[in-house]
Image (cartoon, rainbow, N blue to C red; front, top):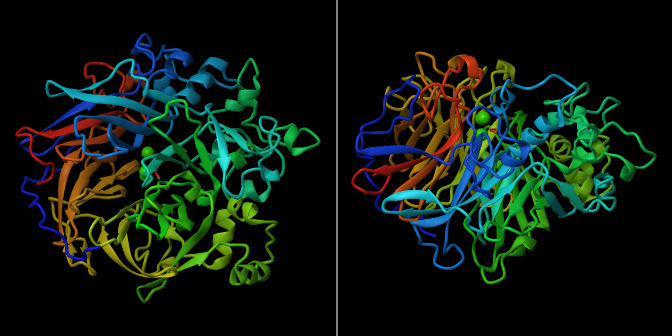
Length: 594
Ligand code: FEO
Ligand code: CA
Ligand code: CA
Ligand code: CA
């Protein structure tokens, strides 16, 4: 692996100014076009978008879902040369729903009508869309056998140490090996063998337990009065929705849904090239509010390494190392089923340690005993990943979101989006600001299997904000807040996307959410794109030739209603705002970002 960066493009575009316009703005010489908005017919061309929220639950399950998030472009030849830049599978997450816009007149009060609940669950999950460029225009390939929706109801199988665990047994799967659906699909990952990983983030409050919470529920925040959307009240009542009420009822775990929430909080593997494949929930990668997962470069004959953040205040960053070595010829899902899950400690002197969460590790055993915590087996450790990380002394971070691995140096970058609840007493070198409303980006370089060296790449904030480790001072051309999405293109340019919410979004200082591009090797950062009103910018990938970029605009008009929508993006007029992908190209057909 070369430590020298190759000749890098010059970022020779004029930075975009901050904006409060209800539009996507890109630099002069570029164009941006909305693509595959929420409601686009995907697996049934008859399921046409109605525009007023009147689409049925059945139609929604055949249309592009809501709230686009993490995304990847798989060239149609991904399994061979992976060079096709004009045809491929665009695979994207649908993180959550806004019932105010999803239904004609917003959500009905509890007990919720079954049809509305079914539609909300169908709008979550993943879309696999076969797309092709013809006559210079990207289009969905209608009727393609690759087109697929995966939703909060799709049957899945469980893999890894917690599969078949007694805490996974439900009425749906008495032997604890299967689960139903994936929800709150935030960021994503791509395996070295070309499958897609979707990550379950804010699933906990979809479930309610009206009795005493067990430890698999308390540390994750399962609700105690009602689920986030009252799905458990669906009427007429159906087992499919009653499962969101995890209050124990039967005599045994497999006679009710007390364990249903334990089947969430995982990373799910999907083979986008096989629409009939069953998605796999990988328990070896830990259970928490997974943002995404990023793999280090896979090296022939060495273990596979991947990183995942737990996006909640004062939560942790994790590393997975496979037990089996990676071999390109045989690589596959099995590599994610055995291995070691580590959690990060960032020491104040710039060193760091990966602490194993392994029931067979003597230090882990000693720390569990000292904390008076018992785990029955490794499945139990993984079901309680956060608790295991607490007892080994991991460093609580300012909301770990996306990670990205520098394609030339192998350094790992991670966004820490914000944490306004960190007090002055809780400040440490890796999380250096109290009431951190603007967030920052940390990075590290592995030193050995269990040690690393870290520094701070970029503190976000208003113009003048200075990062000592990299000597970068923010200006009007690149100031920003709340970094979230993060992605390295193959040349080593780092794309940074923001997710400000509340008072700072749309304000005078920062305007709407944005995307910036950085050349970390030269310390240059420039604002490349600004988004519509009330949206966050997320999901970023290019075609292999880097001449088409895909990004996602999530929740334009957030916090408003159809009657007084703050955004009408992308359709304009008086339309309902819709999350959508955006295609970015250069007018001269050149490489994006150069
Ligand atoms: Fe779904 Fe942490 O963003
Ligand atoms: Ca995010
Ligand atoms: Ca976020
Ligand atoms: Ca969001």
